[in-house]
Image (cartoon, rainbow, N blue to C red; front, top):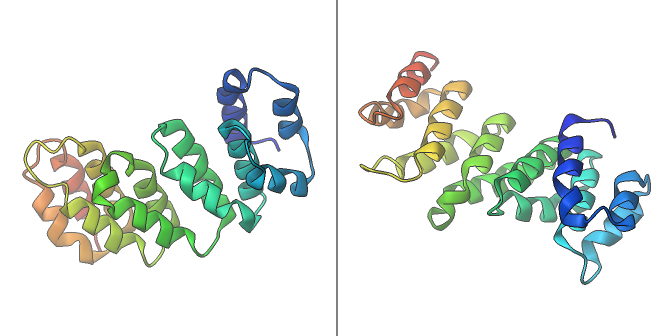
Length: 189
């Protein structure tokens, strides 16, 4: 697998794995069954499960779906980035619904940035409604998760769906969102 995201994942997990033989074997194996076993075997470290899920997801193997969704909701942003990349490549029909559930969960807003970006990339029927709902909840003064709100604004602009007009207009008075909201409004169909 010669992919920039895979090289980044391998580099990031090298220290966590301690350059163990198991780490090198998981990076090198061409056996999808071996990777799938890692996902279900007890007492496997998170780095091993992440490598296996990423590789299977990028190969289009649906067994990676649930572990990747868990990683997409992880507190470590780099794990979320890798999971979002693999989920986009997996092209599982359940992905938009799972990403929408993560993005709209008000208890997990701090971790919603990558689900929001994934929804934008997927451009699925769930994308615009989920981005609108998420952004609507983030338009309060002094919102600490303004980066998530900004990703919603940018995503809605990218998707260009007129249903987003009211929430984008509501974002205009927010200083951190104003320029992006204006740009997004100019792109609506």
